[in-house]
Length: 116
Image (tube, rainbow, N blue to C red):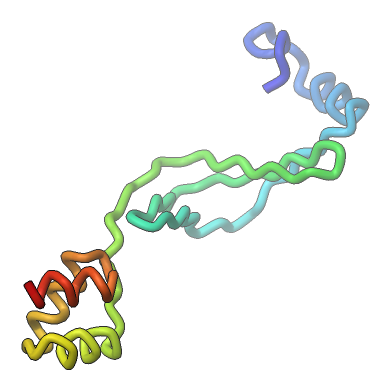
């Protein structure tokens, strides 16, 4: 939003013209089905997203409008890691997998926890 323009009944065509003069271009992305923002611990999912791109002086800024839904991400433990921990500690694959989950996938921490 441009300061001083919101809520004053400005003509949308006038606003668009002023933005063009300032080198700002906004385009909508059609047919967006889903937007996912993925972090290490969770996904933020927009299933009803409207996405626009604002280009100002050669820099693109994406704007997402919609209802976010947070989803916890399950830690993926590779089978090779489970086998390594099981071999090193002499425990079952199930115990090794659980130790890796408890250690957030850290091999050394899982081995130490099972060895003590």
